[in-house]
Image 1 (cartoon, rainbow, N blue to C red):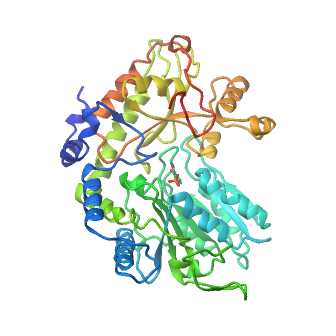
Image 2 (cartoon, rainbow, N blue to C red):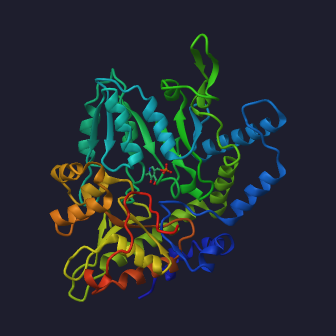
Image 3 (tube, rainbow, N blue to C red):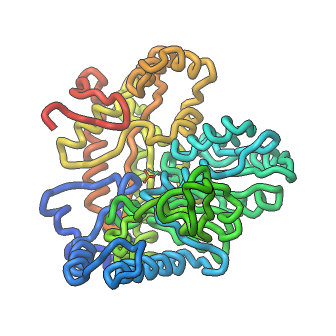
Length: 484
Ligand SMILES: Cc1ncc(COP(=O)(O)O)c(C=O)c1O
């Protein structure tokens, strides 16, 4: 049987192999298999060289003034702002770009400013990153109703009739916000973007979390029309970290009352008069000094994706993901039992290159995902495990109940993900609140996929006991090993 490397569709993307050799040589030089592109993209070495060259020859000052050094920074920032709008097909008349620290910062800008009030609503999909789930705290505090639209099983897609029913129930005289991810960072599902127009017709403003979608898909804001879009640039091209953006419709932005003002966001502020006038457009939302040295690297990153052949990246990831799914689904122990359970779609219909799964031993016992991550690490394979800050998708996938959640909540601050996993494992045999995620990106190749598959095949007929226990504990999203 041939491997994916022999597939003509895959071979048609061989330009990316050359890119890997020239710009990502460190991957093969260190013999690593990187499979966490949904966590963070990888930068090409040329991006760093280009950025350093730009910094080395320019004198760049704080953009909030008129000096030559300041103007040089402003010119670079504004140029980048235009490039970002162009990349997303967004007209400058309708949209603007607000630079933030990351997608979370962009989402927070909307959440903290949105005029939630009694009678108004926040509607979220159950599949959402915690940075979107967190908006509910702002909404609840201001008396708005918070609701979740459920997912279908087993594909973890938005349940459209249930979503439409909720959207149709809005009070149009109030301000209502609907927020959902264009692509799930849990299951890789691409959610239908036509729900944006549906929601707007029904009286909602829409926040599209595009963080997991835009690294490998074109988001065309001349074809879809969300009010707000959140992006993290390191997820698109690895570098720089610390820069994201909120792409916002100009009229939607003006209608957001901010909870405070800060340096850079006002045209005028007095101390004696206790009065301030917010700057128009993006300036009114960029608190303090933006990261003016890193922002020009965003333009370099976009150029990098363009030169690599953005559509080629999507095509290659499609081939590799299809193959990986087929092979994982086919894995069986000698006794015929499946080795792997995939969460979400097992075909390429409306899904991206993120695959979340759990492993089971020949007796059907759930394998500890942390142990699998650890064993993969010993082979130089970087996976992601846990709940990926997307609890709703995992809870739906394992059909965890409200009672399960109440049990967990009773632990108060003592509750951590590992404890929750343990609690669920004792309450429901074989269920897991955590999983293993493998995700593909710009220079993933057939060899990465084969090495991962070889590793997973090595779990055949291994008992949970034989795999041993994990040698570290993860208490939260921050993992600090002794001595590091
Ligand atoms: C779908 C999605 N939304 C939002 C975020 C938050 O991104 P950041 O941590 O860069 O703010 C992530 C990060 O993983 C994500 O995958």
